[in-house]
Image: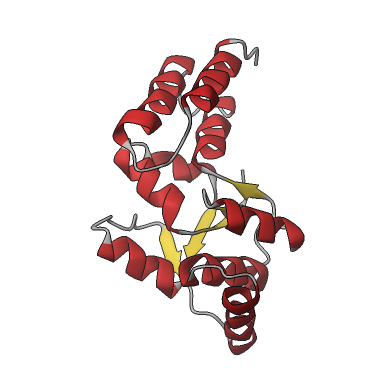
Length: 163
């Protein structure tokens, strides 16, 4: 534990959709930028009390402009990456493929919704059965775009996990 994370909108929305937002407790601190807060409010997603909203410093705002212009990222993703760099966090949480690629260029360790669920399982926060149920729910009850092949692959690896 003891880890710090910055999230963009996706994982918070998707975990809320499958009633699993509490597993974000696997991170000691979670922070989001202003734009992610606005996106969550716009999507009627309640922001968990333990998620802190952090303002970007001027140099991070400059970094955000570069990320939106040069990399064509949405403002929420760009602000979240800038904030992750500003706060020197352990993890950047996103389901956005472009944001993941760019975050890797900045040496940020990224995890998406599935990765967060798997980590909660490995840390024995949720059972094997619940993990499998919630992974399957991502396909049916969430707005996350995910293939059935990926669902099957993840479910299989959870079934075979010996920990």
